[in-house]
Length: 351
Ligand code: TXA
Ligand code: MG
Image (cartoon, rainbow, N blue to C red; front, side, top):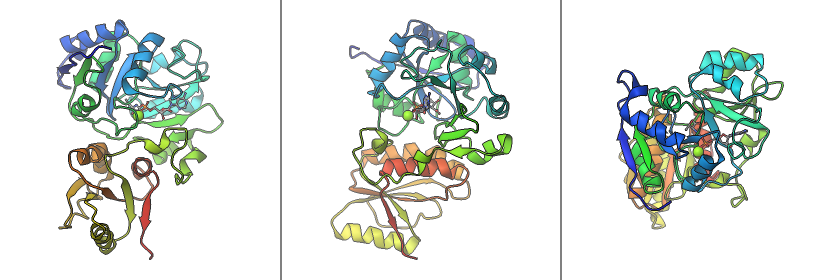
């Protein structure tokens, strides 16, 4: 598209009758014309387009610079709409929807051919979710369309949790951003494949494995999630996901070990950044320290993670050291993103 001013539409999440709000109506009319619109969800901002139109979907891929073989999630505003786009709805999926929709759970099922082929990257399956955000729901209803929406960042960068992040990445590349303030969950939805006998988590996210298990019993994890990402430069983009401005290295050790690790890097002339919790926040003498939340509530870490990764862009450092978290509950999603952002690079204390 031509370089053009991006309209930022400010919408208060809590006003009555959001669907009729002039900004929502304007954004919806643009979606109906196959334009793309960035909007907040409860997880991260999405870049939405008409999921029935390959023309709209092409614009999403182009604006993000996303490889076209990576399929998009379709967003709907009513549980009943799932039936319009998939072949069969297994009983487990009914249970999952009842328990977690609207919410950060994306369900993968065989599609019936109605969703535009570019959304699914020509797969036989489609990923669908119902977001738990008043603006997202109002926009889908006002447009009266299913909206395909990946995270509204440039491909490879940390996902946007504020309208400002979307502007940083996509200003001049899209016409419309709805600003609804900071998103709540902070990490993306959990993607669960429900085409097999047992549900399988393909991407950990806002709804935890433990939560899903409590509703449907045994849940599998995609074996690909456990691969150590040592070798960089795979044809896939997985090693450059969520990449901050400087190399991110995970540090698994106590405060003393952190201190030694920092001092070693500094003795080699490196400027050090730290991504740490309130509990670890000490007067480390480093170039830049970003507090991501508290260990007593890991949801706070999830909420701030991407903003914290972006915070280092304005501050020149040579390396960013980050804490690690136990891989249970929301910690699973946090560690998945930290491992991707670091490309698997970790320093371990010998205990
Ligand atoms: O929270 C979220 O899910 C956000 C908000 C905007 O809804 N969206 C999001 O979209 O994270 P995106 O495109 O950044 O990630 C979509 C993920 C990718 O890992 C993609 O490979 C997977 O969902 N996916 C999409 N369709 C799929 C399918 N048919 N089968 C397996 N995985 C699929
Ligand atoms: Mg994404």
